[in-house]
Amino acid sequence: MSLVRTIARPLLAAPFVLGGLSRLRAPEASAAALRPLLARVSRTVPALQSLGDRPAVLARAIGGVQIGAGALLALGRLPRTSSALIVAAQALTLTTERPSPESSRADRLTAVVTQAGLTGGALLAAVDTNGRPSLAWRAKDAGARGQKFLAKETRKAKKALA
Image (cartoon, rainbow, N blue to C red; front, side):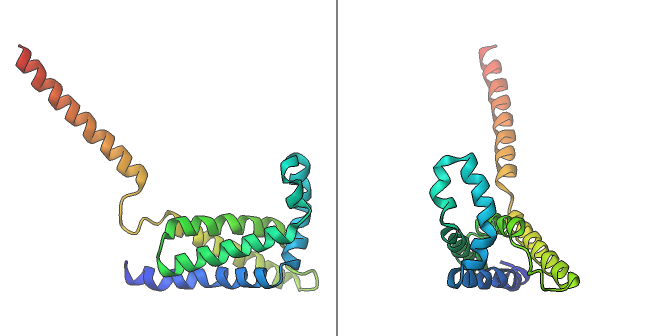
């Protein structure tokens, strides 16, 4: 792992871990923000009715995901998967939670932009291949090598039959 990744991953993960800890300790604020979303989802998907009645459970689950994925990202273990989990948790956070109305407009804007920026950083980490080819490239390359091999063997077989 490069020196930059070694330093950057824990720095990127820290706010998510701290946010997850605060969600686990006091899920009430997140639960209140999640309540309208869960009400709409539980009306659409009746199987999720029980979750709609307990938004604190989802708030704690999001906190647990943030802590676990943040810790994995900080340690450099499964960085793409953990970053993707962080992005998913942040998507819920960005769509439901808003800064307090008592804050000034500039403070609210700063908070939203900061969360969006952190989400962007996690999104970049989710697609970072650490200098190695991605799975899509590897699959495409394997297909191309397979086609070349088949063409070569076909030519050999035609020569042998002629």
